[in-house]
Image (tube, rainbow, N blue to C red; front, side, top):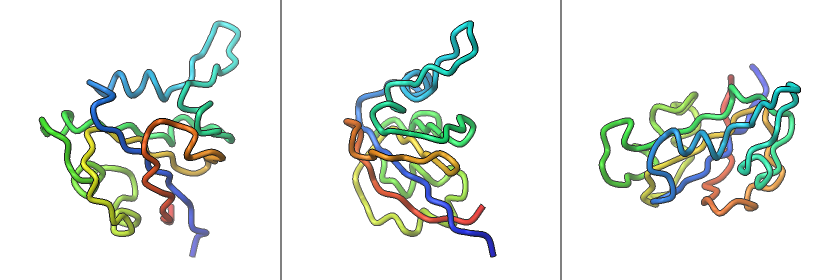
Length: 124
């Protein structure tokens, strides 16, 4: 059996109007010199061991939801959701989510204005 990994889940309601806005907040910049420039989200949450392909952004409208929904609905399309979503007990309504998967390491999950729903285990 593989070692358990952790996904950190962050929720938002009303802050982002589109998936593009979430990605602008989450994604690192890549100046001409090739060195990654950390995003605001990365700085706020203290992400280290950055692997950009392991950070997922979700917007409710992309799944046809015009109003905020519970995490069980919003997050069901996220990677490995079948493993970690049953651990989520929140019914907080949200229209956007950010999922930070291993090997990314979140050192300050409460450093952002987004709601840190928690860290949940899964096996890759």
